[in-house]
Amino acid sequence: MKADPLQLIWKIIMTTIVAIMGGLLFKFLHIPVPWLIGPMVIMVFANNFLKIDFAWHSSLRTVGLMIVGYTIGMSLTAEALRDIAKQLPLMFTMTFILIIFCAGIAWVVSKLSGIDYQTSILASIPGGLSQILTLAEETKGINFAVVAVTQIIRVILIIVSIPLIVSMPIFRNNGGQVAEYIEPVTASIGMFPNILYFTVASFVFIYLGKKIKLPTPQLLGPILATMILQLSGVAGPELSDVMINAGQFMIGTYVGLLLNIKSLPSRNKTVGLALISGVLLICGSILLSFLLAIMQDFTIGTAMLSLAPGGMDQMGIIAHAVNADLSTVSGYQLFRTLFIFFFVPITFNLIFKPGKEKQKKSMSPSSKSTS
Image (cartoon, rainbow, N blue to C red; front, side, top):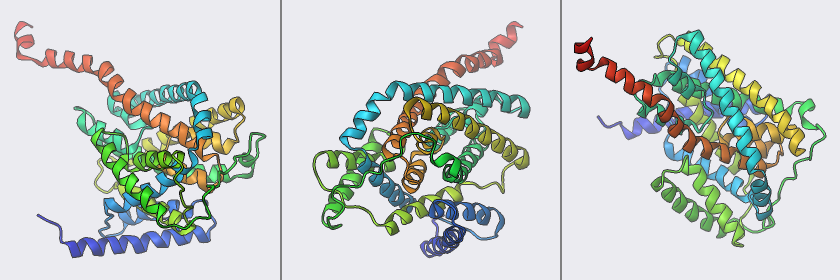
């Protein structure tokens, strides 16, 4: 049965009003990144505790991701890309350590909860949210609800806690290199017509990204398009604060609506374990970020956002807001996203497929008849 378009529009309007209230409240409270965190937090509560049907169109999230992608792409200058290339071995090492740590958390959670290890490890891996959920959906024997709730709670925990931690005075100046925000050399040019070139190129790269199955093409497409145009000498205008806040608002509202615990079986236990898993993962990434800050002479803020197990879009927004080194944060986050995108499905199948095949053989009629 097709949804009524007028009803959908009304739901989106109601969602927008409630989400704006969250943004204004968090701005009034002087909480960092209010237009990302405010809509997200208020939508989590409203969606789960109010008897109102909320909705958000996927195109709104795409626009938000395009704005973030443009901002990240503008920071990826030739010099920044050279610096990122030099850090590839360290990126690999830090990502690998983080994944091993996640596997350990998954083992502990599995033992405490009785949830099978395959489900637990997919719930703990800090990959792109959409990619991990897709993998969970396509893998037989996985408890999708547990994976979805744990992953979404992890993202929400990170988006709420990391800006607060990074904004604390103790983490602002740790003796590392102060992040140098790269002002676009073309900031004085008008918005039109150049922004149209970047918009068209972004849509083309989003389309190509979907075709070749890139992770989160709505974000990676604009990043690649903006980076290539910028390196080619095409001037990119600087986005206004209103546009950047709008992008944060669209993404925050979308993430907030993802968490729906009303129909979750054993929700107290599942949510409790998800919170414990998320907190452990954040603590582990913070410890690693101190090591990275010492090794690379980064500020703690840059190191923490580089290794925070969140999405590249959210970490990019926060990095921009707190004046962390956006190109470094984006480089580390992009590397982890791609590494997990290619590494996790292959490794997951190699490790768990033999066990599943043995289980199938043991359950087959021929094996029963010979027993």
